[in-house]
Length: 153
Ligand code: HEC
Image (cartoon, rainbow, N blue to C red; front, side, top):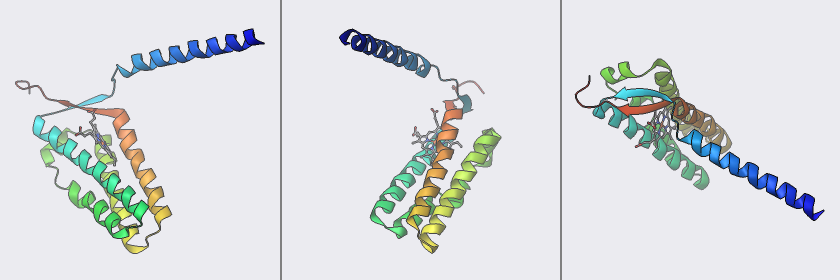
């Protein structure tokens, strides 16, 4: 009995160890598609990303506090109107799927803003936020932003 128990414990430890090691090995390989951008463009995209995260934080806090006004205002800040600040030259450097996922994200923030302003159903907003965040996770799993080296074009 004890022997069987020990046997399975050892198997468990062995397989767990193997999983941990293989995860580490996989993590070190970043084979996401690289989008190479000059520093200003990359900074702009990353700043937009931080804006996205701030909006998600504010919307989550607003949901917890039932503050629909805060949800609507913060979602609007990263809605379509904000997306238009991206210069055309930068837009051209972004892959089509990236642009589509980005636009969908801005649009869905607008939808959350409208829901909070007009109807204000927290369950609906939470569901929309969950869906919206699939854009974040999908895009992050596909692309990485690589800075253009100075001197190369
Ligand atoms: C259209 C693609 C796309 C979408 C949609 C997207 N991201 Fe990103 N995000 C990226 C890429 C690419 C990076 C850079 C990752 C890298 O180079 O490793 C990034 C980086 C970030 C960063 C790091 C910013 C920094 O200063 O380094 C944050 C935070 C972030 N995203 C949050 C979000 C959140 C939150 C959402 C959803 C509301 C989101 N992103 C949606 C593509 C996207």
